[in-house]
Image (cartoon, rainbow, N blue to C red; front, side, top):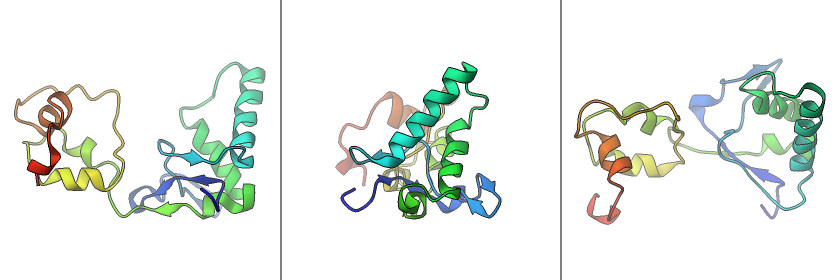
Length: 146
């Protein structure tokens, strides 16, 4: 973050998650970092504060993404959202494979990029799943998995 105000991850699988005019999503809303005093963060914080003071609620679940899209459109903080790190991996792999039968081959793929999970996943069903092994039991010694 020495040379940029923010960092996130852009995935090929989510590049077209949100599109506005000619602009595409280039961030992961669940994975952000910023340097102290970043203009980008100050502006986003102010938008959230002012919107909430006026409307007492956020109109949509994807409010943050809509704010980020406006930041991208107007090139906030030297076009910070145009300089996001591309992550070659699938942020949704763990979510899609949690209910599958346990397979240690997934571990290295899960660790390649931060994984996006959902609060709704309950892990019901079979006992020998990736969910049971990695989430409920924890990962005791990853070196023995590979």
